[in-house]
Length: 88
Length: 215
Image: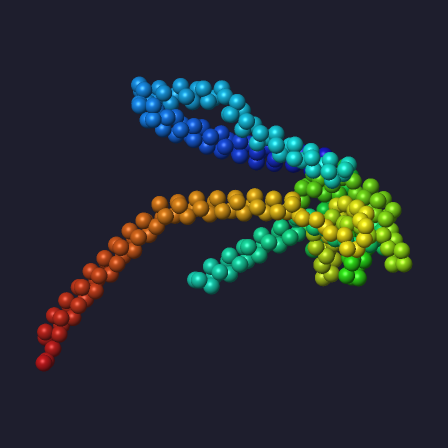
């Protein structure tokens, strides 16, 4: 039981670090992309407002929720390995 | 300095290679001659042993470990241990040790009527440290010439690992070129300038001294 707890705790901490890094990185990428879009669209209105609106749309998007895969994929892989090693 | 640098990187990559060679799965074609269990008192070699069966007490100083004796296709013997890795490292998540022992016992054969099996395992056999590779699964195969297949899993894991290394390396190079090199150059330049100034002053002093020397 101790070994499982240890795996879950360490795994959760490690995956959370990855999740946070990927979230920030993805948001920064989106911000850069929005700024470029603003340039290309002939600078419609205030740049910051344009970027903020774009980021708000991004916050509610499916693309952002896909980052939760950072948690889901390793758990699925572990499940698959357990099945293949022990019951296949 | 260059030698230290080389020694450091050779040691580092040697350890990385050893780590992967120990941890990644490998396949042997062999014939099982016997299975047994033996009590092991773990000593200096304790990190080369996995854990007690999942759910059992982990605080004991010794325990019985299953072993599988085999003869490989090159007629040399190999002894595998058969232990749970459980939830720990390496992440094989093996819980079916006793079942595997039963399967291995079922596939026992003699040299007169050999039954060949493919044994998936990780780890090393080392006689000087009394360590054994851990068998993960056994599967009957047609004969001693059966192939072990392309190790796709190892290829994928190593590719991903080296992709990561490459990504970090490229970023480090870029960071160094942008931040550290200009700083070092700056320092070298001012150092050189200081050196030149000192040399200049010295030669002037020398000329002044020379002017007093008897010609």
